[in-house]
Image 1 (tube, one colour):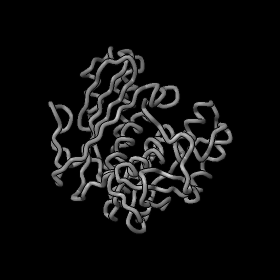
Image 2 (cartoon, one colour):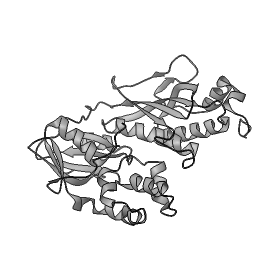
Image 3 (cartoon, helix red, strand yellow):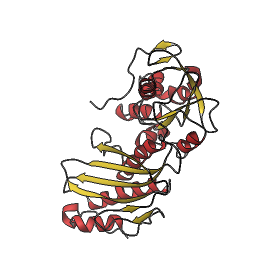
Image 4 (tube, helix red, strand yellow):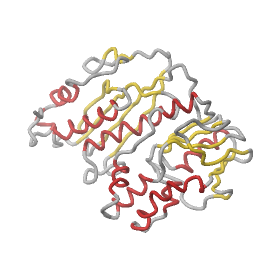
Length: 318
């Protein structure tokens, strides 16, 4: 039985009653020594180092309540944060979540959001260990993820070297195609529309890449070319992407691009929020990864089939 009447708002129920309902009965992973309910959480990280990253999702900017369910939003908030620690070669072990919403927001909606947060966290063996709840003019979700390197060296963006191959784990272009379909009100293409609402990072592949000797790695959140650009800039090298290696991604979004009057190659190369992983390796990549380009000496830049890309390169927050 749901703890809240559908007509009850968070103001009706009260902050502490809402928080109690959000944390009651949740099972924490073994790494959590003290979970929600005290002044702060306590985690056990055998490695001795903790990987930390933070993201914010703002209603109207990163999600729409007329497109996404609260459960979808919760899953997306966790997934995009987990991808950041995956890109360092770590495993997400815990999340801290702050949620702001208007006082008249249904308390049941906050519970469905929390269910989404927990379902996505549980998929990788992590938990929600704390957070905050505040009144705000619109929905805002701020998530901090804590990760464990498990004895590995962190895989940074500055280690790519000439001669490395560039490889990707996960799929590209799906979220951008889904967004175009939603934006234009085009029905059908359910899998692509769904992928925009809830990304599917390749959980575990960051650690696979680290164990295989990845020299650099990043989460593809702003677009493949934009995020590879960070590696090129910080490593001081040139990256050349081979579109032929991305034909399967192009084919997966081509019909949607036609329906939405878009460009399938722009979706694949510059569309963000797929949260695939891109990395460089000194030799063949491990299972689960596919080669899409090469690293070469030269000015820091990202080329496509040997030429500069003339279009948009990816998402920018401002």
